[in-house]
Length: 142
Ligand code: IDP
Ligand code: MG
Image (cartoon, rainbow, N blue to C red; front, side):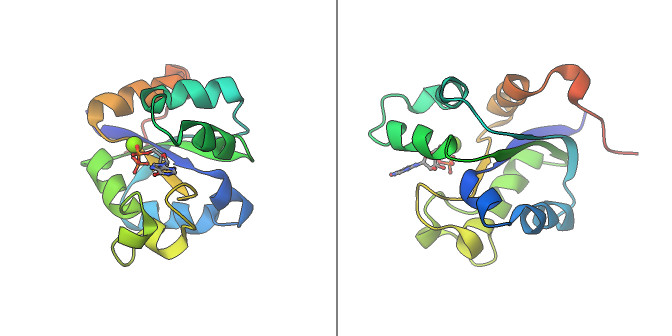
């Protein structure tokens, strides 16, 4: 089965009209969209999604930011989709992100860093299921 990963265009991305440019990067690199939804996350939803970071000092700031505007949530699929998406995104801190990556090109700070991407194939499955029922996921490979 083809690999899938979860991608989120964060509020700084949607507010600066970067949705099209970001999706273009995924498509240029051969990833396909298997599910997509525009959503304004509730606090509860954002806290649940980032529960693994609950003890981190930036947790409150992260939840505030992720609920500050709408996001675009996508399941991306393709060969090595998880690692490929992480590569396209670049490092968490835009100051350390490689040239040509989304975070290098567009991100404002380590917090407002434009995109989320799952960090393992196992977490990808959990994160996709957090937002999408199985019936909302299309196999986008002919
Ligand atoms: P990742 O998004 O590259 O996987 P994580 O370490 O999983 O990075 O952190 C999740 C998110 O938390 C980051 O994308 C960023 O928005 C935020 N974050 C991480 N570290 C910091 C920090 O030191 N200050 C503020 N926000 C942070
Ligand atoms: Mg992470």
